[in-house]
Length: 300
Ligand code: TA6
Image 1 (cartoon, helix red, strand yellow):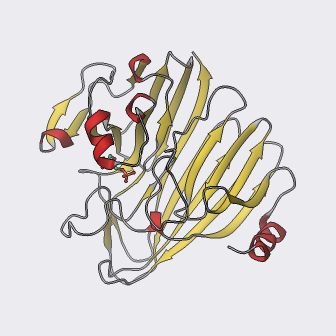
Image 2 (image 1 turned 60 degrees about the vertical axis):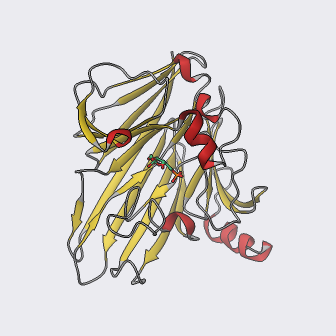
Image 3 (image 1 turned 180 degrees about the vertical axis):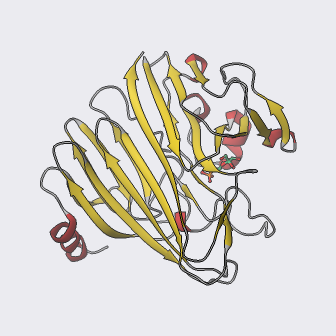
């Protein structure tokens, strides 16, 4: 994006001290939100939240040291927007995992700021392409206040209904994976991707000591990621979601992925707010669906 284009974005959507557009050293345009001591950075490539700092403690988001915005491929870390399918395409395995809007440039639709929050809405239209013969308008609204809110809205603008699976695939930074536990999913059924999607039941708060890749089914009041190494709880709440994914690649898969940097498994954990697994959204022509996540950080 040229400096002139950035200037036009700042003229149209910049808000003094709250919303600003700039070029990231990672190689692409980003919008920076500021509210008090908190900051968020969102890449226009993929509508991708890269970073969220609250003013105390490390970045809440984990981002690969190898992340780039200018290579046309999915950014490793932050909040990938998985849409219009979660994980592999249901029938065409050659298609990119987690859909195609995470590797497209989004446009800026709106922005705003007041004493309570700073926000920006990014948008993209997905029309008939060879492998997705439908039409939809998608927007991601990122709202920075005392917490961080993400709202992913899909509107079916075509004349055919389609099935949607999606996720806000959030990579949280942790101080030391050994000091982490995840609560709020006890008693829930999950699909274990590492065991042929076998249905299993969660019995206790989750500790991570190996690769974990699970789709938890049903409504989730709140999921708590407790990190005793950093001394913080990340509370995840959601709307429009009846599934949540917990993923850590551990050592071997992180090495196979090849772009996570050294010992990444010790410093990240994905808790993804989703419509995945059995949780499929059927969107009729003209209908809309909102998938929303809210993150709050409190001291432990
Ligand atoms: O959500 C978990 C998962 O489906 C894992 O199986 C792993 O493939 C991961 O997503 C990959 O995420 P990425 O950021 O590479 O799209």
